[in-house]
Image (cartoon, rainbow, N blue to C red):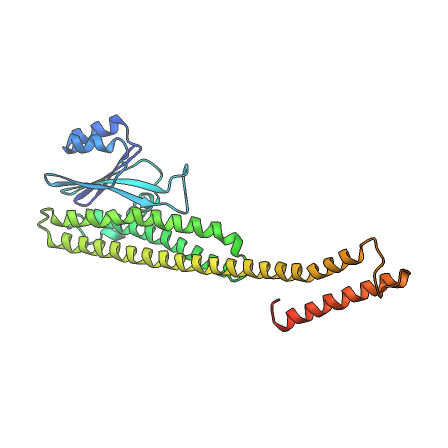
Length: 299
């Protein structure tokens, strides 16, 4: 579906799951390179920047953590920046594009603004705000995991930490190529210094996001190490308890085996009193071992 939006001197064409007819209409009406148009027809596996004369073609991926559609962890938005022209193409329901469309209906963003690429920077502001919200979701999950770890749920948090680390790793893999795209776009011959200044702001925001991603990854690694240490400590306590119990039971079993021999034993009467003497002896030995281990603080 092709949607055309006019804003002062700029035009925004938004393609949602573009068809061949949409592409042909765009090529015929706006003199867009057919090479770009054909690339818009289907999603691309990698992020990239291509220059075609005065037009810049960007393939941008956006992390998707909170609203996975068909298991997809990224959205793709293809962007064409031309003179007084912005073209976007998406192949899924991309929230930032929807938000931008709604906000531009109000028109507050464009009051007094008509410089080169202004629509593009509104789009990038919306996209990076969405990315920031996704990252904040991961940060809040990390805090929740930390709380549960110290509540004694170390075992349950092993899987949660693995998923969190996978999400933050995927997040970083998606955002890192953005830097190269903005560096390449800065090298393109845009004569408007204000465009370059705003593009530098986008580049700085990307660097800030990557810094936050790295910090979050470090937090998750530290939480994983802490969780592993607590699990190991708990396992050591269990093994110590089992060892102490085995050590207590061992002499009692030995006594029971000795007095269970089918022979006459010295100092032990063969009457029922002998049974109680053996039980008393085993009880004294067992309690003595327990007291000794308690005194040594072994359990």
